[in-house]
Image 1: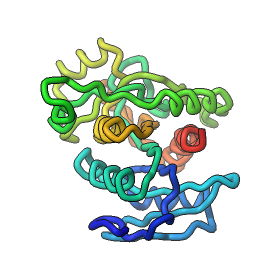
Image 2: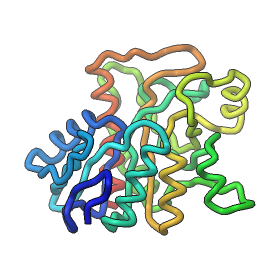
Image 3: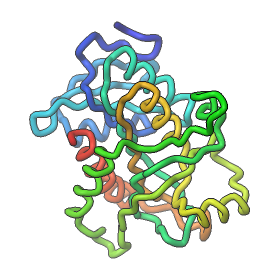
Length: 243
């Protein structure tokens, strides 16, 4: 049952997986949601935690940075461990005046500059979109989110994001064009997740906290603000995981 990147045995990974990018954040999510969770794999230091939340099984593991890294883990989870849904819970940079640092983006779809998606169906520009059931669950859960305690807003948006291969070098003209077409955030994983899930008839969603803004440079939240903001996205991701 083990793969080159996951050493868990059959049945040790839940049908629903929460997937942040950072392995340390995965550890913190597991400790917050499932203090009694078991570590069922730790290949390359990427621990997979499995436990229950409100009686329902859940696993948490990191994707690493970028679409190639996420694609490895998502493929193995879907193909080998029969995972049914993966929910990315991460961060994004704001692209539009319509979104602010601290807001949460439920990624309806993910444009991309990556060739990974174009290879899915030769001759077709594949539309990388989220699973409706998971979007609906996250949106419903968002209605009960309290405001941020420091008055920064923390609005929830359902909108496209763009998944880029490069972290640096976002051309201003591209940012402007993406924003003009309703794209609110930039990140590095959602398009690959959506494409891989679709190719296996599985479910996927990305819920991202806006941690910085490419238009005005606003960023650098305090560690306390980052964790509080991130917990809001985590609430929505958990609702999707157990929809």
